[in-house]
Length: 118
Image (cartoon, rainbow, N blue to C red; front, side):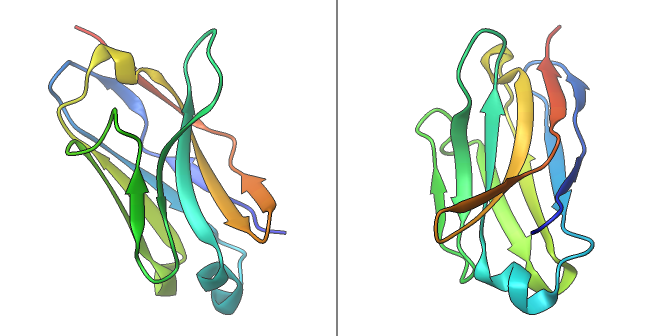
């Protein structure tokens, strides 16, 4: 099992930026590197959706709605993954969840709220 702790959410104006962080403080380094890490989000009244994922080797994948605006990165030695969000839009408002996946097993953080509003 892997514990995930998110931080970095908040209120930002349209066009602004936020950087989300996800740490796995208790994970063994070799265990963390085996996981594909990702960010998902859930807006009120909507289903949880993929935002971005990154494999242990650094291959990333993005939802079409965030391509060119968001960047996912990871540092395996620090057992940490980030989501840099630029040019935020009101439609990006949601709870953002960190995810770790391996061989069909998923682990989730508790989420961090991102609100984009003027």
